[in-house]
Amino acid sequence: MNRFLLLVLACYLLPHHLNAQCCSPGNPIGGTAALGVNDAETWRFFATYRYGYAGRYFEGSQLSSTAFIEDGTFNHSGINLSYGLTERLTVEAETGFFINKTQRYVEGILPAEQTGRGLTDLNILIRLNLWRDLVKDWELSAGLGFKAPLGNAQQTDGGAILPRDLQPTTGAYDLVQTLFLYRGFGKFRTFVSTRLELKGMSIDQYRYGHFFTVSAFQSYAFSERWVLINQLRGEFRGRDSRPSTGVGIQIEGDRELILPTGSQKLFWVPQLSYSFSPKMQLSLMAELPLFQHYNDRQLGSSFAAMLILGYSFGKKQMNSLQIR
Image 1 (cartoon, helix red, strand yellow):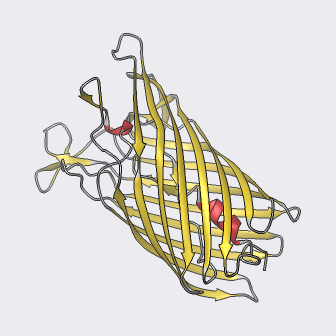
Image 2 (cartoon, rainbow, N blue to C red):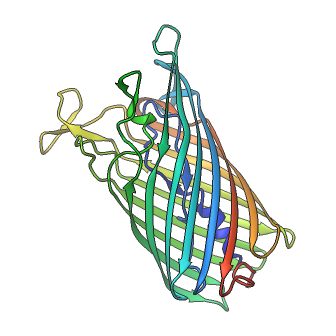
Image 3 (cartoon, one colour):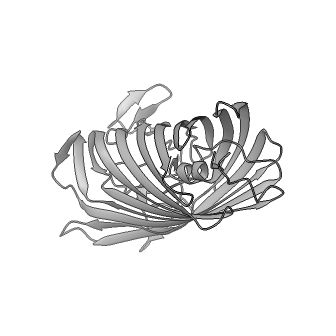
């Protein structure tokens, strides 16, 4: 199978550090959540650019009137590097940079606009191939890792701390678990990938809601260079929690769940990939929301697009990206 396609697909599955809550313009997604292991002694490098826009409020699953945010955008760049320690074991590292995370507010609110920027998180993941059948074209892999904050989670603007949704990182350490299943049918291929993020607590005792995503893909290679991929992705995010203030849902440990946090979403993600050579490929994808449900009233997702450039090198660089 074409390993690069798995990597490119995966670059759209890793929800980074910020939760899309009441004020967030969206989140960059990078990483390799839908990926099997590399070939032994093979490196893979990915550079990504992602743009996102949010301009609609939801209350539950229904469109709602605008609150105090008019709209929001972000521009994010990222890098990912992975290495096959053995044929069954791969280690990878990923980080990124917010060029901007911007919110524009409704008329009468000052300041009229706020922007955060900076380094995101460092993601470290180890992937293990659990089972592979080259004849029937099956593969099952699992991953375990963590996310550590690199950027500043307390950025200010005009002397005031920016809203959490504009900070480049949550400032917390998270545990990450992944599972990947692949089945090939000639030119058609199917994939199923899951990712669970167990959120840690920041220095100010704020915890973002735990996150789970499941994605199903189907790809078709209509030439040696062009591949079309359809993806459906579901996202499930729990409510955030903090020390009790008396205005949230009270839970044990003198903490509370924050009302306008947590969501369930379904996205359609079409993707087109082009191979310049067995070692270098380019992919373009869009993210279109099909269904969104939010706890209370929150700014919802509108549109996102991503461009990914991938390169493979190492001991098996000449055949590691070929369809097997």
